[in-house]
Length: 66
Image 1 (cartoon, rainbow, N blue to C red):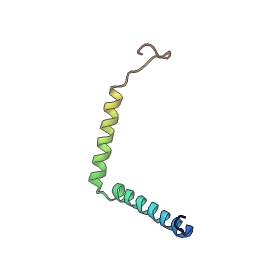
Image 2: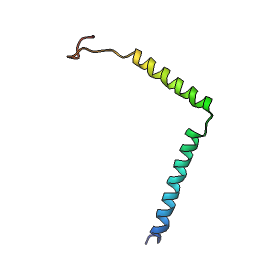
Image 3: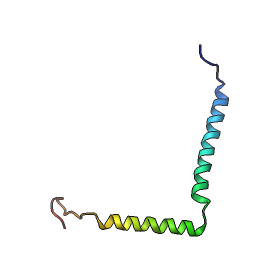
Image 4: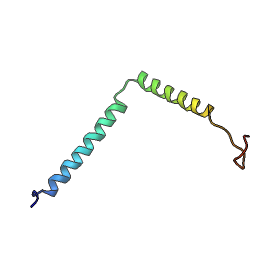
């Protein structure tokens, strides 16, 4: 036979673990200086721009470049 588990305690533990994971993620994203946030947003913009420069524009029918 299996181990007896109190479902109320299990739910509370699971909820607590989820909150802990969310708090860890929030600390990583919000616990940075303004300079670090600006640097990351600038790097993201540059990466998106570099990606957009390499896209091939297609015509309406999709088989020839515009």
